Length: 341
Image (cartoon, rainbow, N blue to C red):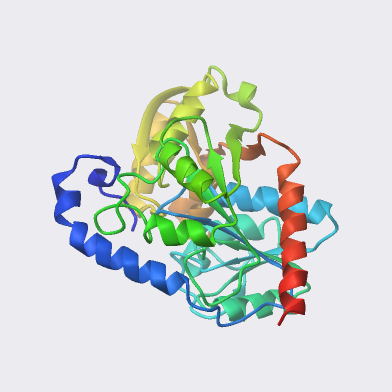
């Protein structure tokens, strides 16, 4: 879903309550499906970075932070993702020089620029492909609700501002399955940001004795943005959050355009952004995902790509020792599970 309905985030929506029977049925079925025995077990440890809801919550920066921790521990990490928005339907190693977002999706391009990355709707096949390419520690970017591949550790990411919305499963709310079955399969919860939207999840996790970690998204080189007049655009799950983060660095957002998650700009939209930024003499700023979606899509997109400045971010854990602990625990669980097979 490229753009979440506004009633998903309202606690008193008549529409959400009208859809409650469908939400109950869908949430119950997907929760039951999640509990099915995995169809395959990878030869190497598998760490899954997921979320409870449809849409973004910070999975990709979390996955990158943990990949760096895995590499620091001596592992050879690689990413496994479905490749949302891409047209390739078979297991494929992403080549940033060859593929574009229409081939493999935007997030895989970001991941593949740093570590080996496989896109595959068939998760077990994608895992085997990574193994064949020398990866000995797999990080799944999403796939928490998919039972086809055994996960040794599942870290579920929650945005502190949005939380789980109204608490309904789709279509009445943003949950991909009822919260109870999802929490039962989570190894730990990571809350990103400082707000109260995730309080309900934190309380539910505490009742199940699930560890809750905290982290924050922080811009790289924030001082470099101070005083710069910019035209900001983003097609992510929460474009307002991107604009607020940009303004908090001292950047002056003179104009902006917001699109749905994973939105691929049309030639007309590209021309509009290019024209307005040029006539107003503004720097064009976007997210790393949006910049990735511009690559290899034609002359006008490439022209915009040359103009844009990427607002780079990083995920910082409140306790800097947590990433290493997660890697160690994933490896420990993997050894224990495979010895018991």
